[in-house]
Amino acid sequence: MTFPAFAPPVARTLCAGVASVLLLLASVPVLAETQDFRDRTPRIAVVSAFLPELEILKGELRERSERSVNGVKFTTGMLEGRRVVLFLSGISVVNAAMTAQLGLDRFAIERIVFSGIAGGVDPSLGIGDVAVPERWGQYLEMLFAREVDGGWATLPFFEYPYGNFGMMFPRSVTVSRAGTDAPETRFWFPVDGALLEAARSAASKVTLARCTADGRCLDRLPRIAVGGSGVSGGAFVDNADFRTWIFEAFGARLLDMESAAVAHVAHANGVPFVAVRSLADLAGGSAGANQMETFLELAAGNAAAVVRAMLREMPDRP
Image (cartoon, rainbow, N blue to C red; front, side, top):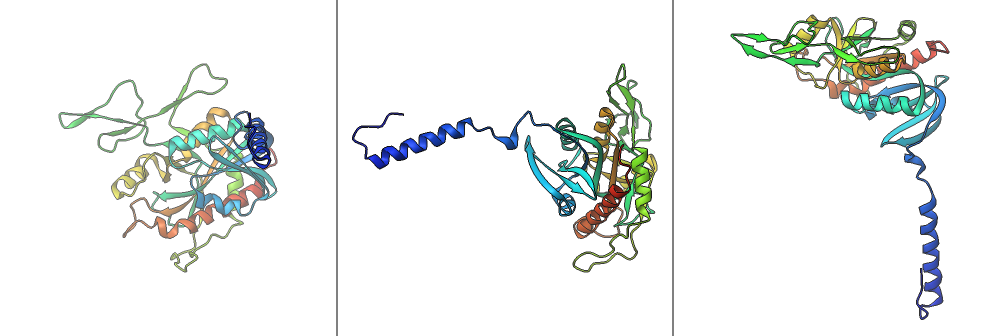
C-alpha cells in the first residue's frame, strides 16, 4: 500500500496499521467452520430435534466446548460421567439424516441416543409417558396408488408389507452398508440390545414429571414403556383416523419426524442407536385441541430424565 507524501504522519501510521491487521486476518484460519475438523475422542451422541429439547441436557453438561461444522453447532462435554457430543438434528427426516451423518463423519461417535418428544399412537399410552421402542420404521415411504374401477392399482416392483390408508401404500426402503454385496430391503431398523437394556434398567430408577412449570397437571403419573415399535415420517400428524391406522397397521406406540431416519443412518454405519421419546400430544387422538404447546417442556424434560438415567446404566463399551 502506498501513502501520499502529503498525508499527515498519524494518517500514514493508521493506514499502515489497518493494512497490517488486514494481512493478519487474511492469514488466520476460521477455526469454527474448518472443513477438515475431526474429533477423535470416543463419544456418545445425544441428539434432539429442536432447541427446547436439547437445552435441558446442555444445562447439565460439564467441561463444555462448542464447535460449528456446516452451520451445525456441536457441543462436547461430560454428561453423567460419559463423554458426549450434543447437537440438533433439525426437524424432519432429511435434516435428521443429514446431521446424523455429519456427526458420524466428524466425531468418533460410538453410540447414538435421540431424546425428544413425539405424538402418542398406542391408546394405552398418555401424554407425559416415555416410550423407548425396540425398532423404527419409515411409515411415509409409500406408493400413492392410482385409482382403478373403485380400487387401487399398485406397482409390482415394490414390496407392500403393511395395509394401506386409502391410496397410500407403505413400502420398505433400501439401505447399503459395509459388508453387503448389494443394498438390502427392510422396513424396520432395530434398536441396539444393550441400549434397550439400559433403558429397562433406568425405567425403575426415574420418577417422571406430572405437572408443568405453570401448574397444569396430568391426571396420572406418567410411566416408561420399553419395547414395541415407533414410526417416523415427514408429517406432523394431528388426525384421529390416520392415528388409528398407524396403530393398527404397524402396532406403533408413537410417531415422530426424525427417529427412523437416524436409525437408518446408524444402521448403515454400524453404530448402536436408541431413541427416547416422551409424548407431548396424542397425534389427533385427544378430545380437544392438540396439546403439544402445553406439554412440550414437560415431555422434553421427561425424555431427558430417562436419557440421563440411561447414560448411568450403559456399559462402558458398546
